Image 1 (cartoon, rainbow, N blue to C red):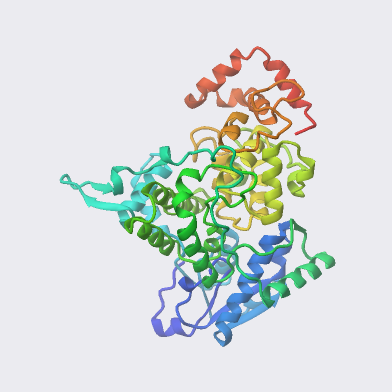
Image 2: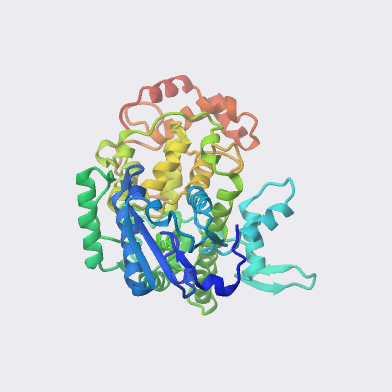
Length: 504
């Protein structure tokens, strides 16, 4: 539903902005309204850092807007909006929120905050016919449409990517430097908390004491931008100190370096505090100025203009029931308490313990920790994909209902049977050993699959293949791993060991 009323009627409306719409991109100069609804924070257990960031961002935006904005702190959205006929919204970012605003008959403007519009994605998807909606194809189409990292047409009229290649993945898979505790980069710029943050902390303490919310994880300090000004500072810091190393080490992991070379902009982007197109233009300008290598810049562009837009559009394209109807590998196991409580002390394997501990402290982990440690572990052990997706939404500061289903249910858990990824992202300990320093001091050996020091990931990989072999037999990309499984002399012993494993 799109508002087609005249501009004079539009000016009389108050724009209700949601927690994903808190930056200048969503402000056209008219009257605004923000609602802080306590019930939103009590639906499921939530990481304290996430609850703090959302509340801080809402309250900071209300303070910035001053008399231009109504700011309501209530139990439910309905307490404010029911009975009003003067509201408009920019289409919100979840099925639940869109259903709510449409049920109240509000004027709805097209969504913002992404490189491509929903209409542009529909046009692209329709042009594919019955073909798969591959991210790589979408990414190239976005660059052709926008001109990002493009150098113009060749004599045949074909558009050419900057540098003559569409991606530089082969340059962006370096393991961390040998014997390094960190990448040696300057510490990221951190926001300074203020009285609004202190007030948020007091309220969360009270709400938790009263049983209004269930909070998991550590209590600050806040590490992610909660205002547009802070988001700009974070972007400038990334460009100055980490962009050049982003590409080569974007998949690497180090115990002593939780940020590595990542931008830490996913949370403020998902809050709507900074326009992703502005972020990309800033990053690309560094390449053209000779300040950053093409491989790093292209890798970052791929994450934002490619993957981020892609999962946003697939959230709507695949439908609201996608997480609950997708379970191709018949995974039904509940998440363990160590995950639900972010209890790193209950975990012995270094890679998983370090990742969960980082989540406990910051509400964040970078994409390889999410995919190849957390996701890989969950895939091997058959955790329920819908429950896992909800956990990712609740435990990460950048977790939103739109960003996690495709990432978790599709990419990580292969629960959709191949819509997003052509094969499961399962691996043994060898990958983690190559891309991190986790295995060096671990009591488990990534090269061992049977015995007291058998790596839970290495042994778990073969147990996973054993469990899912009937379901994956028709996938040609799994032919080689499954052939290896059938040649495994100690297959039954490994499977039995993992079935009874208590220490991981």
